[in-house]
Length: 201
Length: 201
DNA sequence: GTTGTATACTTAACAGTGTAAAGTTAAAAT
DNA sequence: ATTTTAACTTTACACTGTTAAGTATACAAC
Image 1 (cartoon, chains in turn red, green, purple, cyan):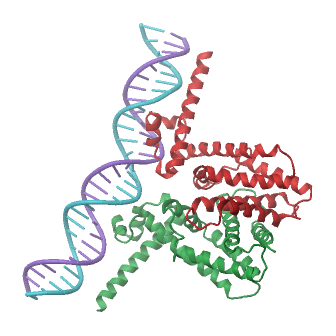
Image 2: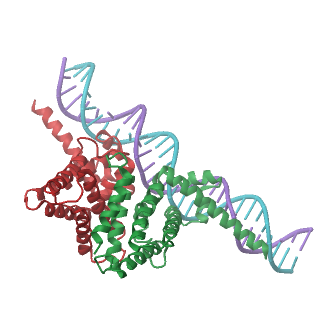
Image 3: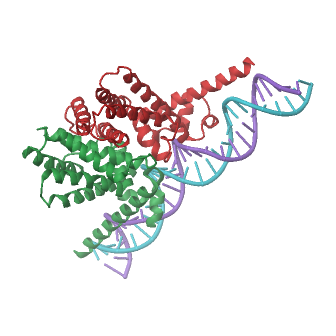
């Protein structure tokens, strides 16, 4: 049944088209300022067609964010391979996390700030991509602790402290671009370095 | 001219009424889900009356946030008085900052996340309340550094690292209430303790 | 005490929003 | 050749922020 498959493929293509258009608009103009009609215009379909592929605007946001998380996960997992000192890998990962956020600031905010506002509680459920990202962090921290490189024995707490630090600096740099930050790169390094130093045994 | 004064007082009262109604709605239903008409209904005036007191919806948000920052500043400055160990004061202030955010989560998000999205760049300008909050942090850090209790000599960087940490944990706890956080209170303490430990000489 | 004017507020309107329901068209199945 | 199904569109509704024009009341001047 090649026809059915072709049709399914075409459906999936349109779905992707919608996602691409939505992401581009969300990122460039902000979720609030993007209307379903704008997205529809961009893909040259009627506005309601989108509703055949996504439940509503929040669901569209949700799907865009899932992709972002997948990107982040891929970016991070690149680092795991060069398995030198686990603490060094942790540092590198923190750095990569912040850089990811600053490279795609609107995607980052969409995923870690806007989405939780609209899809309450969701996004870090069991089996989700979001959870996989945190699993990655957990695994890294776990290795550091096994080698007794860190002070706390508690993987969860340690991971959450790390996440706080990188999330915090990422959002501040995104949201207050005009604040008189000390040199950005140095500041990011200092945040990560300070946190890891504080966690060290 | 008592009449003029009375009229000015009445005007100011309505302004305050609008602010109170707006804050309550923003906090309970989220900025996006509050319409000017809803606010108007609450105060029993026509929607357009609000525009006689505030430029637009963003300006209303702006004013609400300024109040929040003033509250935060007051909360923090309470702590300055008991001037024991400056590092201890820094720790307490961090704790108070996070607690403030968790006590008024929607106010916090409105001020530190929503507002920068709508009032680009504004909010931490010279002479603003926002700057005063950071000035407070600067002063505290400065004292720690003068007593050589902290590693870095750079007040700015040190302050910004502190801010990252508390901002990060505050937002994570607000935005992902269903995440399996380790015990909240302990986690907050650990974040602050870790950061300060990392900053120590 | 009447008239003019400024102040405070409201009504009406516009262009836009998310989205549900009904309608259309064209291809596939019988 | 007819029916069914899928994909998409049109229409419509109730709502949004905001502007412009209109109204009514309180004050000032004569």
